[in-house]
Image (tube, rainbow, N blue to C red; front, side, top):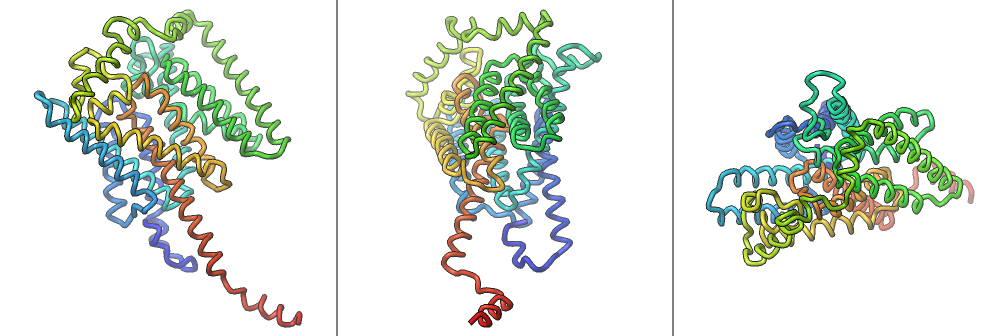
Length: 430
């Protein structure tokens, strides 16, 4: 399963080919399961843990291009392990760090399998779309009480799908929605109805999650993706197509939102949640006050406070990824996380407009990493499975680009000799 396994392009080994197909199918199945995390450990953890070990046992390699991702994530988790040493009550702490370490390894795994075969990106996103549409429909059905027993897919009158928290459910739907937007703008006209239907389901799911972070993420990501596509495409006709289809998609989504707003329940909750600052944000010991107190406490504790300790002190978690990295992973984790975010954004931006088979997936993942870094100011994302998948996609595409550049340099330094028939014709010309 490593990139070195196919040493000769002229030999076909059916056993190896079948193994690679099964492996790719298992990767897609793992991504599909990421949309169903009602309890922990979820099936996603079990399937991914098994196949991560199996893939590396069968020879999957971590290249030099992906080594920084591994180092940064390991150091981030070493900071989490150090934070355990200052905890008086260790309950839940070791498990929290273990989950963090597993998610870190999953990110490196995704980067390695994408570098091994870029065509797995299409499988990953198709599996993600399928999972997102299903989990979104579960949340929608539960929210409107279409079927009995589906209330389990809601929480506090908000759709949460097959997730534990609406604030994770909403952002999870945005990357596959962005993929459908790209397909709608850049794909065949015959595929448009299916893409529009899927986009409507995902948009309604994001709306009914009533997550302000998800709403902001969706708006930012859609605008950023369209802007990048306009920069990439040089022809006026294609730019006009993108702009016209974007306007049409916005109108359709607005009509869908208007239809949903006809429900008084939806309208009232939307009106309440649409406020920029909620009462629990600006109140005494509210979110912003906890941020200030947490940062001040962290300045005196290089090893952090320990997992979930700030939540036990103030009754609410950090709801800020930068503060969370300080309290849970210490100064070491905080520095590593900042470097990880910036390094990911830099290597992705550097390759963003290069015409490659993996470019569409890189564009989507890069925009989503930037968006998650922004919403991380008001929410914790250190245990969001799809965020680690996004890291893996950006780093995997960067590794593909690095390998592509090496191959181009080799071609320039050692050009292949012309085929015999071509050489004979050149002699006859003389």
